[in-house]
Length: 493
Image (cartoon, rainbow, N blue to C red):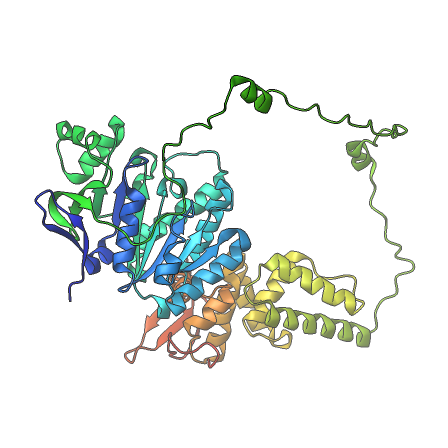
């Protein structure tokens, strides 16, 4: 079934429609200088398609929050939430299919990039069960996918650019249809703009932007001058969802309005005389005298930190007073460490290893154990615990698997040990959910990509049985799992 959205009228008075289902598969790029009517076009598209598809709007200026009153969009103010919370909100938005407006108006430019990256990342990383169609509209896209470095830090710029690239390049398979609008095509990253198959070009004055617009529309360079003559709200459209040939369109009206004031003319305040104007403006009252702060005795010069560090000698432990632990005390100490490790592994969820290590050290201090394992040792212990291997099971045979895991990056060791344990015991291959948890993520897709990477590194060999069960063999050890369903519930596995 074709769903036609009427965007406006052609110069001949014929209705110009947009195939919504085709748009969700082929994406849209809108370009026009400030005042050309880009936001009006996006508002028309959002209003006409609100009842047909879930909508997510990344709004840097707060122009689209008025959609909430007329169409029920949820407004999320980025200034009220951290980046981690925004990512979780985005995941819930996909699960519950709620149309939402991410309002970035209250945060500065660099934080806008970070918040947008976190929110778009949450949409992109949602589980496969939530991959339903959603139109993701990003206004002022050149802010989030800049062609070159700007005022924001490189870290924030790279995060936002990666999120926009995922949206436009890989979002289609996840049900995300990118609709991006920009004032300057030259300022928008080319790999982001190139993924759109539908274009709507408005009024443009700079030669470089007119040339790129003409190239995208398949027009000759000498025809690019026409973009200077377009009126406000007039666009030239091209793409499989609109028209196979460049089509002039005058965008239709909208039901809602932006909160920002337009450039209305307002005469200056009329005063009776110049003397009254002088009295109001120039006769500024003198500020009250500021009391001088009380004088304080000068502080002694600060010690030279570098000199102190150079002269520092670490304290020599007093081995004479150290009392060796008895076997019973050593066993009790080992038991407390194992209990603390299990508690951290069970309660830690997907927290970073550094945070889990702090929790681990605090738990040991409560148990009066001061000499805690260092961070690298804790990483190895945590990976073994997440693999479900009890310390008592770490025999000589298992040490071979641990040695092979040590050759892999730290974030992949836990997954390798989980697979090695299942292979050594000959049980069913762990499902994607269990592998994702051992990897520290919710995404089953990331778990599958990690398995492919481990196979490329020749650490494992994966094969699929006739019934669809997955079997994983550990290279070099001769261990092999029984067939297991990759889509089985992780808790039941």
